[in-house]
Length: 205
Image 1 (spheres, rainbow, N blue to C red):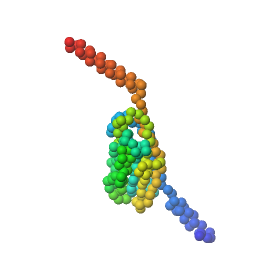
Image 2: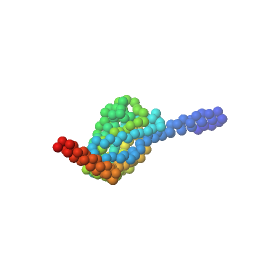
Image 3: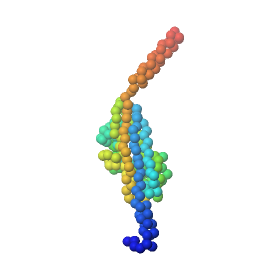
Image 4: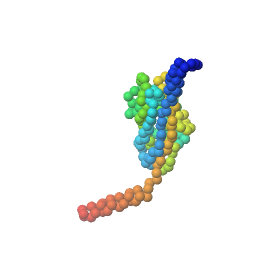
């Protein structure tokens, strides 16, 4: 308890330090909407993270979860997830590992930790490769765990082993139907090609 006029300065300092100690770091990931082509493999999606106070978060470990739809389907499918190459853990990691039982067509989990200390958690958090073979069009939930996911939610730990809970806004994958204009352009291109072939045929006769 702070008593007396002389103690006032110490009380104010203690209150200030207590407020600072209570500041909560807030890593943020907004998954966003990603437009992909239908019936196409090898399409890349990158996700980023931002944190106004990386020195408070002191991120040293990551369990990354990504899911399409309810995680139980087969297309579109996730063909690879990389949380190390070119990411916030790129220069300080112990490699990435797959969750036990965490590798499905539409749901994958990957983990990594720092080799030492903590990282600045501002930058790319993951590179995800999608294959839409067999899908002509549609809109699909694209989640890293803000809602219910098959493998849980994306989470982080700090350099003392405590959880750091990110603010996550999940997104969507959108595969638009081929536009009428696109189909017309394709048809026009085929007509021009056919005309050139006929012209070349006549010229060599």
